[in-house]
Image 1 (cartoon, rainbow, N blue to C red):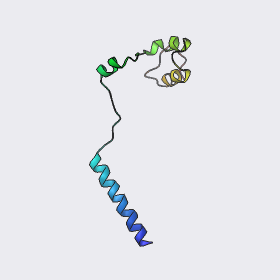
Image 2: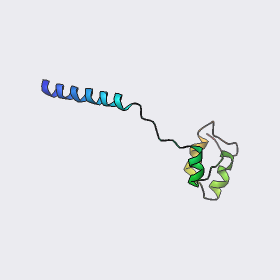
Image 3: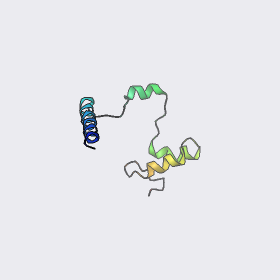
Image 4: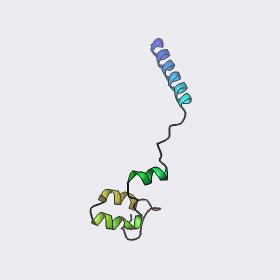
Length: 79
């Protein structure tokens, strides 16, 4: 039992040291230039209802924006 605990403890130490060496993990980000080159369309919150009616944006995406008070637009029903 002691040998198992020692092995487990050694692995935990190894992973802690590895995490320290690798540093904090950050999500990948892109620059404005990369967004411009991507061909993606930037949609403003006030246009979401129109995009939803046209079927260009899924309803669940609009619901997510409406649940964020800082992104909510007045024409959409916000919870």
